[in-house]
Image: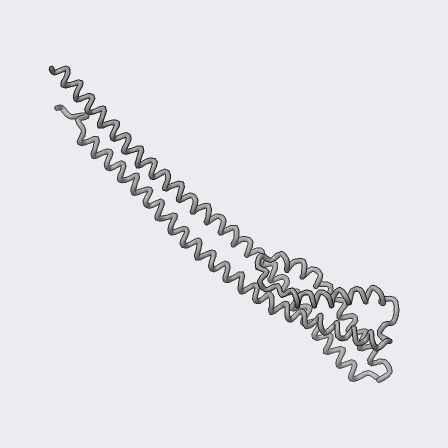
Length: 240
């Protein structure tokens, strides 16, 4: 009778131990799944930082382009003013030809456009890429290059039609610098706005991940507490 009672107690203790292990496994599995869910948020945060790094690179390129455009606009505007001053002071015989030659020289230094257009198309946000205006400036630039290549070994400024072409093209190219400076300001503001949105997203995602990790910790703490209480209430270690 005593032996049967001991066997019965051992069986009962074994059943409680299995139950405790099962409870522990359930809590452990739940906390593991939550931890994996939290890692997804960490991965999302990492992806957002990659986007921010890309924006930072674009901002550096943009600042470089703005600096170059500002230099060319300032230099071109100043050169046109100097050409106008010389035009007023020179004799009637040569003033038209020299005026054309000075504008010709200004347009020759507009080669930065070629680099600018290639870099602009690399920006992730093309919302501010006005194809009509961009193509107009690019067409003017290409037209001048073609004209320059064809007439550089002649004296085209002696012809009124060529003089009008050079002066008009130079003005358009220099004015284009100012337009693109203001355009890049819009792009820069958009990049800063996108960056702020991404940082807010990181903050929200980080808070969600923190809440998940706290919940995981509480589950593990609760499961450990319940297991200890269940073990204490069991017959293991009891004199009875």
